[in-house]
Image (cartoon, rainbow, N blue to C red; front, side, top):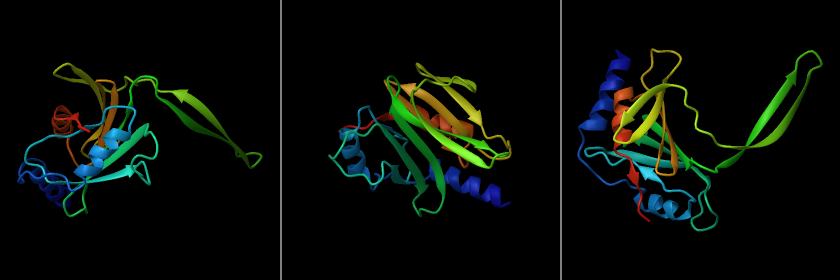
Length: 182
């Protein structure tokens, strides 16, 4: 019953509330000036979400070029996490990966840093809209809504995750993603 009430509340938030601008709209516009890629944000009518930008943290406008960002969307009370959206360049994006090897027998561990170039992972169910091809992977415990939806829009890689929104709602949000003007 609790899951049904939570899902219903999220559907109402997603499709039934009056339209309003994000409180952090100016920060989003400023952030778009500081990235080395185009930022996309949902443009659905009738949404009233609270936007949080946990990456980069701390964000200091104009200080350095941002290569990766993550947005978290909550209901307006800030208590229900709706979805996360991670973005970076789709081509030529380099990142550092930590690889830890644990030797239980000798009770030792070692960690190496390895620089990698991003490549799109084509695992998951193919989902298309307009001229976009995306991949959807549900959570391992099929009891939860959502999962991961990833695609390339323009030259930006976008990955959305949610345990509240359904696959269909995530696709609807993805279809609405438009570039943030700076």
